[in-house]
Image (tube, rainbow, N blue to C red):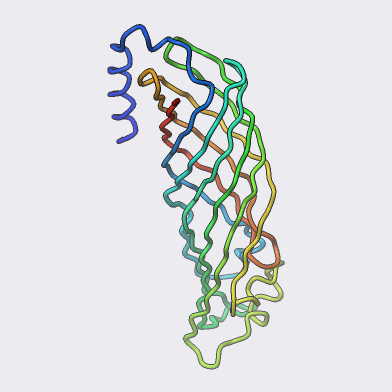
Length: 233
């Protein structure tokens, strides 16, 4: 709702700007964005096939990004930047094979960020509006921090509980944590509107692909919807 109001206000202002808004733009620009990040955990890595397990997940957070770009022509350009997707949680109270509860609660804090570079193709709709698509690469970083909250003492070994079900070993890595880097593809699309001679506004969707690895951090996919402010010096 807030984003809709901002775009509506900006449209009214932009349509009343003087003619010089159509002057030649600077080819270089910088930008910042804020939006919503959505994550989907890989079910096989996090034991979601465990029978009768009780689960609680946090799969959305606030995303921030900072970037710079250069327009080689009115159609083609390139961007690079950094995005922070926030923190996510996965919690499961697994059962023994057969269905009886273990009394242990396993939880994972999943923090994710990315360095990215992409090519951008733009199509002008009018003097103020354009749409674009992006394709590039990102270096995805995830830090998975596991915890075991034991109701029963001593704790039950994780491999006893999930060894026959989960195809990864993340449940047996509960004494530390791990960090994983993964090179992946980035795709995106959006709409841009000029707000003044030097500034523009964007509404953008981006898919950053897969994060993490199977055996230590667990894998997940992350995408974002963001509202960006562009400045051309």
